[in-house]
Image (cartoon, rainbow, N blue to C red; front, side, top):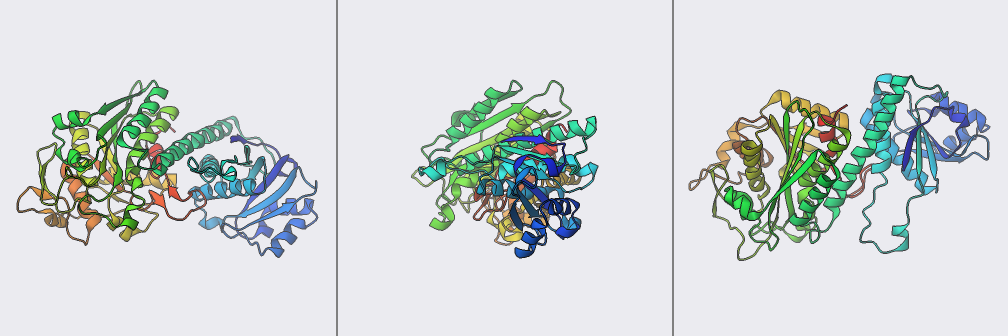
Amino acid sequence: MDFSHVAEPALNTTTDLLVIVVLGDPTKDPTFRLLDTATGKGLSEAAKTESFDGKSSQSIVFWTGGATGAKRIAALGAGPKADLETASLRDVGAGAAQLANRVGAKSLTLVMPSLGTPREAAAVQMIAEGAILGTYKFGRYLTGAEAKKPPSLQRFGIITDPKGNKPSAAQGRALAAALERAQVVSAAVNKARDMVNEPAAFMTPSQVAAEAEAIAKKHAAVTVQVLSAKKCEDLGMGMFLAVGRGSDQESKLIHLTYKPKKAKKKIALIGKGVTFDSGGYSLKPSNAMEDMKVDMSGAAAVICAIDALASLGCEFEVHAIAACCENLVSGRAYKLGDVLTSMDGTTVEINNTDAEGRLTLGDAITYVRTKVQPDEMIDFATLTGACMVALGPYTAGVMSDHDAFCKGWLSAAQRAGEDMWRLPLNPRLREQLKSPVADMRNTGDRFGGAITAGLFLKTFAKDTPWVHVDLAGPASLSSSRPSQPRGGTGFAVASIVEYLARA
């Protein structure tokens, strides 16, 4: 899909589909009124017939019969202007692109609502991202002709001024940069979706490593190191290796590094990379195991974010580390009651083999803290069902005891339009992790399960500034949203890029 900023009057634009975004009552929208006059009140009649009043997700389509430069006009509701957040325009862009494909339009021009110059570039970025993310499909294994049919939409133009006034040189550069950024971010998100949506039989630890190696090959500033199980054993990663011991697939620790010519500071991104999670001997029931190919969503996010950061440019040295393995049952698998020795020497009693993510991350965090020595580190993991119970399926839980760092991260997530909420890292709950036979056990009680998982990880982060993101809910969806089809979402990629990429 080709994107462009269009500087011409909406009335004159030659396009298959002209979409106007309506904020509330359409009769108060100047572009709607202008086009309604041009169509002999046909647009307002269509709105009346379809009970269109500008509510979010409402739409009408009107055939112009040559009354304007557009073959069809669509009005897309986005709710009251006072309630409109910039990130909500991602769903607007998605809805417009989906509408264009439904009517077979090859070209679409969208008239953006007036939100003021400070929000203009960000709004353009969100609309373009939505168009790409909302038309994503994972169809690799579908064989029908309809599934293989490409979408009709090829060109997506955005009008920021319905009267056609050209932007200033500075505005023009900002809009062009926004469109480029949208395409890079969306490509990275969709790549992460692909990785998550692939069956676990294909997306093994070795395949995740191959994906990372392909990214390193694309960019001169990116290098990759893949540590074998033997190398991880030499480093003392007893927790990480225990989780993958029951599988025939070799566990791999993947380390991608992006280095600019001059770095302001060093940032580490750590992703949980359990490519399939059976629960081990604490076996999951079938319905809970069915989608456990998504348990490497954190790894997919950090690996694909490096691709976007290298494309856009970044002022920081960024390391992406993913400890990848399968948690399966066999005669070699780790067992309840086992005592594991972590890379930093901490011993851990296993009281639940389905609480494996914190074990892999604990050793990955130690590796990062001691070998990378970053100024900041953030881990991303589909870690606990408890976080989903607390926050629902769309919101990630965030924990940290470094307030300024955490606030900066949450601010970036808000700008990126990804729902995150800070949970307390209550030290009193650490009592739940006490073990009579080891330094700690790997799970606490049922209540506060997301927080005790965070406290477990904090043990290995020590004093390094650290943020934990539990994305168990939003990493995949069982039902679609406008810009997020069912399945893997690529969650956290956009926030990472927003936090780190050069503006």
